[in-house]
Image 1 (cartoon, rainbow, N blue to C red):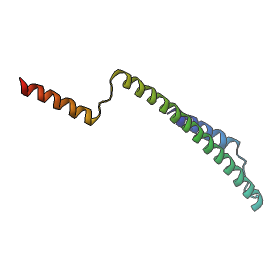
Image 2: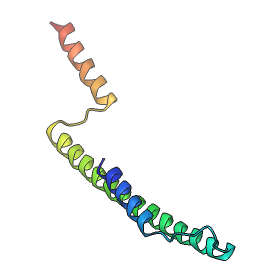
Image 3: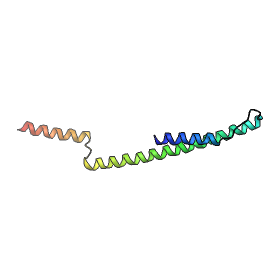
Image 4: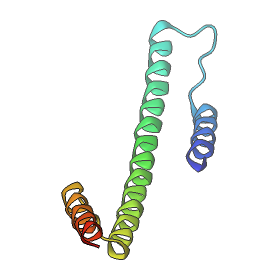
Length: 96
């Protein structure tokens, strides 16, 4: 959500800063203005991608920490171990 608000704010700032082209501008001036707008849009895109990557990196670290905490509290039982444990319990119950 914060990324969206920041992107919107950045977009409006860029619109305020972008060069205006008058109606009587030459094709070279229009081309320069379009190139300037493209540079601004490309920089915004790179900044947005960096922010999103940083957020994803932070989320990965958070999930890895959560996984580590869960693994410490409860050991992971594989399918083979579970089957062997159930077979032992079954054998014990049949002996009774």
